[in-house]
Image (tube, rainbow, N blue to C red; front, side):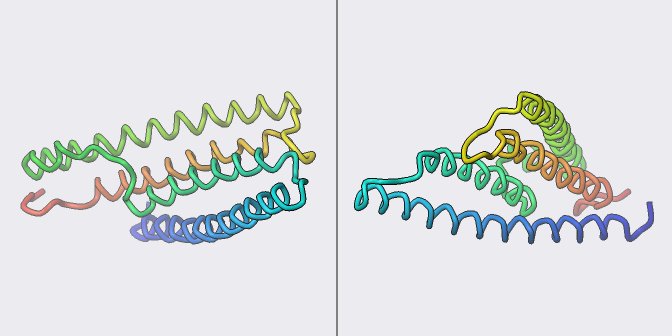
Length: 169
């Protein structure tokens, strides 16, 4: 691996992060407008989209999982970092790296399992609403867990390369 490879991977992660951010903004705007329209249609015109609640429910799922990938990019995901804080620098780095590798492993496992789930839904051929196949809606699971795994992989690489303050090699 060349010296610029981690930098290129980091740039790719940032690029994907920008796409995520725009998808989140557009999706949130669409869901807000759709929810308001659905409320107006139901309360004032006594009509509405039968599948509207399902669309909103799946939209919230997409926003949640994309938000989780965004949090992973920014390092604002939920983490338990008591040991790296109280241990000496070298042991703290080892504990921090171990937590990163465990997170990577869990995300890879979830991405694989969710991909198998999507394949099962695709083969089943179920339609969710408005002629949209159900598997399209659950495709966010392997996408988000795959992105989180990619980001944890980058974090693990950066932890292996960096040197904590006060620790000599």
